[in-house]
Length: 149
Image (cartoon, rainbow, N blue to C red; front, side, top):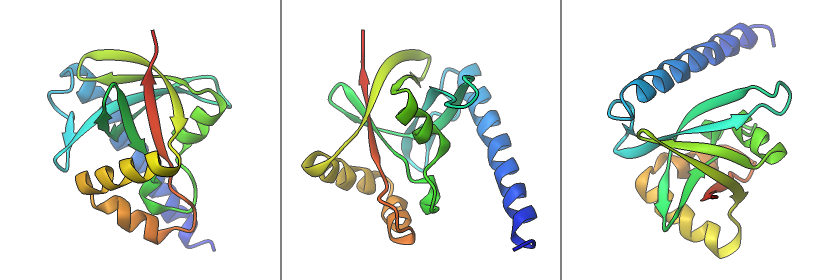
């Protein structure tokens, strides 16, 4: 489908630019600008590219759960997992930036009752997640960021 490809490329390019801008503003202001979106807190997740080895930053909505943080690998309900989740599957160590604070984390996918409990809270925080899950055939992962010393 040739008509869709340039459009998809244009969307992907725009998303990358918006992500870079959001990340830059977040860092410059210590999260005072860009630290909340749609009434939800935002963190920057730094992962290591599984192919390039380069560090990548992605702004993501999060939910604090005790000492841990829960994020959703929704990718807007598209059929493919977000690249940051693929990167974490290759290397589960990452850094979460919350405001001006950097926290080393080990990541893991929530499962079973824990996933259900977190999913309900995450959908309560951001109802679009439920729409994203209905939009796709893939199971959208809930990812836990567990601080490590």
